Length: 136
Image 1 (cartoon, rainbow, N blue to C red):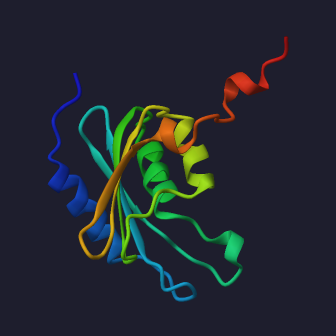
Image 2 (image 1 turned 180 degrees about the vertical axis):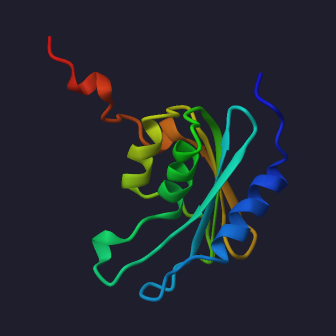
């Protein structure tokens, strides 16, 4: 049974991470918080680089923090940004997350209070997985 974590606690962790985002080029700051199956929360923010592909999204930074802590079981993610509307994870983040949590619940909050919730399966209906690498 997954320990109960308040949705407000997950959102607060994402908002705290957003305050540390490094986005001097896009001005698009994002914070993310990932809830592990054991109830722990791991947060991350986006970190841009003048060489754009070298930047890292908030969602993958939260995932990296969790993996570094030894966690590989996830149940929910909250994303906050300064965009007016809720922003889902980018394709690269979806692919990274599906490796560990294909049924992850993802909730995103926009700057003006709107929110949206999806499952990762809805956001990435035909993922490339380890099964895709198997030979017949």
